[in-house]
Amino acid sequence: MKMERLIGILSILLQREKVTAPELAEQFEVSRRTIQRDIESLCRAGIPISTVQGAGGGISIMEGYRVDRTVLTDPEMQAILAGLRSLDSVSGTRRYAQLMEKLSAGTGGLVPGGAHMLIDLSSWYKTSLPPKIELIQGAIEQHRTIHFIYYSPKGESVRTVEPYYLVFHWSTWYVWGWCRMRKDFRLFKLNRMTEFTTGEPFAPRSAPLPDLEPERVFPVKYQVTVLFDPTCRWRLVEEYGADRFTVEPDGKLCFTGGFPDADSVLSWILTFGDKAELLEPEELREQLRKLTETLARRYRKGDSHGLS
Image (tube, rainbow, N blue to C red; front, side, top):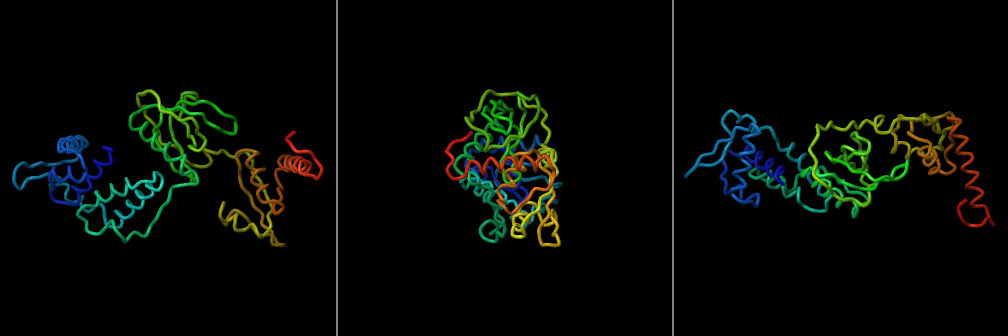
């Protein structure tokens, strides 16, 4: 992709005094004409690049930018490598690692070995997510709409979205874009999208960055208080942290937290079986009582199968 190649060329120029167009063409597996167009693009972006023809000539960054050659230290390049490798964990390829090998040309043994940070962004949905991510990346670069059926607690709907950013947050992949149905920017979870296709070109808007604060994406409707058996400590620590509950005199754990809807509260409580008691709010405590009575009747011996 052109942007990745431009970043690669710029990094090489920051690390080396001079490089020739044939060298860059061979390294990035493109034509010399493509490299020339890339250099023109970097110049238009404000990078002062000098080209000298003939023997001893080559491409270099002008003298005033010499100080910037130390911008990327070895540890910083290793951090970039970890990030690029993490993207490979999603796509199942070595595309980004190969880009990093090109980025680090001339820096010695920076890429092989020495890495002490491993990031795996893949998930249980290794077969369904990568194709969506690839299609969305292409749609963003080509300014094409995406069409899909979206499933949410409010039901399912057909959406047409102008995509601007792929977002990895809360261990989940999202796409941020302009929803033509809602006439506003929205965040869509990739795992809830089916029958995904790309559509017609669109004129890019001025797109704000998504506000990923939990209170913004999942506004709190219910503040709950739950009493847990001490054996549940590990789950509370893992899911919410050690500062979200207190230890009662009898050893039980008193948890307080906010949830966006009743279903989120009830389904979460039920995963703890008989080791959790919802204390507040009374409204949800009553809903949970009715739900457990319904479940008790359903699983009582002798009752017929089927949902009612």
